[in-house]
Each structure stands twice: as C-alpha cells, then as structure tokens.
Image (cartoon, rainbow, N blue to C red; front, side, top):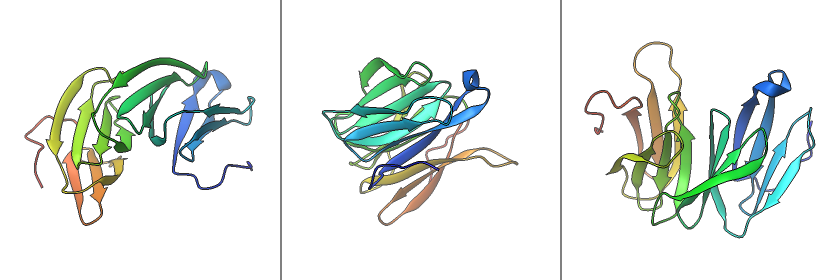
Length: 169
C-alpha cells in the first residue's frame, strides 16, 4: 500500500524489466509527477506546467503538459530524454497502442496519432465536437484492437492499427 497525493488526475502502470518484472505506478495531480515502486525509492518531480495526461510504452513515460507539449521520460533512469511540441492546444487525454504509437486527445476535439517516440505525426482528425476526456486502448482477444475516445456527449471507437479507412463513426 502506498501513501499517494490527493486529487490524482491520471495514472499509468510502468513495467520495468530490470526490476524483475515489478511494476511502478506513475501518477499526477496536475502539478506533481510521482513514481512509486516497492523496489526503488519513490520520486517526485515538480513541473512548471500543468500535467494533463500520461501514457507509457516500451520504457518511456509520455507526459502531456497544458501548452501542448509532450515530455518523454526514461522510466528506468527516471530522467527526461526529450520534449516535442505535439499540439498547439491543451492535450486532455493520452494512451499508447500495443505498437507503441501515442494517441493524444485535444481540448479542441481533435485526435492526434504520433509514431513511437512521439516525434512524427501520423494522422489527425476532428473526432469530437468538444474536449476529449478519455482515450483508452481496448485489448480485445478477437478482431482488430480499438481505441475508445470519450467526450462529454459521445463515445467512439477507432481502429487502432490504421490498416483500413479507420476514420469512421
């Protein structure tokens, strides 16, 4: 059991193979980023921007901040390895796919799909009329994996692998 900060706004589970398959919890309340592990000392990182969303894939934690940038942190070293200006507006939700792509939902209702590492925009479209509140990768056993996006008034599913014309509602 962990003592955690109040008013958590987002959380990711980070798998760290060097910790003998132990998982870490990384979470934010908007101003602070914390990582907890039963095997390592916890960290707390203050940020000058507001942290709006978290995602994780292949050893990298993706941290969206309120100015539309995404900060990349090496989960094992717990150090910043880069920053990219992904959007000109607030990123309100993020998730990662099993292929390592990062999906970002914006306050404007747009959805961005970024290549692994977040430095190349693969696709963008207007997915909702309002801010996207949730993006989640659905790991289904049969058929095409999907990403679910939620706004105040709508829920949509999108083909995660982009193999067909997947811009459809």
